[in-house]
Amino acid sequence: MAFAIGSDCIDVMDRSCVTVCPVDCIYEGKRRLYINPIECIDCGACEPVCPVEAIRFDEDIDDNDPRLEENAAFFLETLPGRDTPLGRAGGARKTGPLGTDIPQVAPQVSST
Image 1 (cartoon, rainbow, N blue to C red):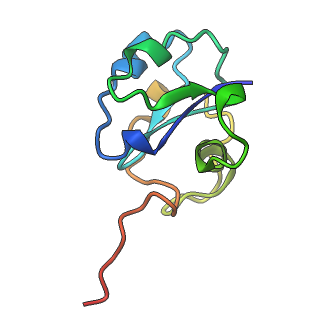
Image 2 (cartoon, rainbow, N blue to C red):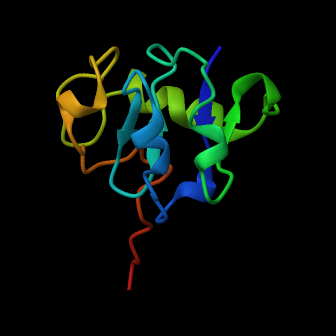
């Protein structure tokens, strides 16, 4: 089990959660943050510091809520501009800001 960050984080990215995470498992996309479910140790340090209450324990999230799938997809799918999935990346400081999101979070492009 792990924590997940919801869509309330999109374009907010306060990063308070990043500074309190003891295992460096919160990664920065372009428009939101993601918790690596493989690296998360379920300590809960991130949840109370989130100013928009976007972080929830995955067991407390409805199975139909897209945030679980979105967080996992960020690490399991090949992101735009990358050659391979992140998987167990070894810590967010190691990768730095990734500058990309899963397609569900990417900004909508106007056709006009």
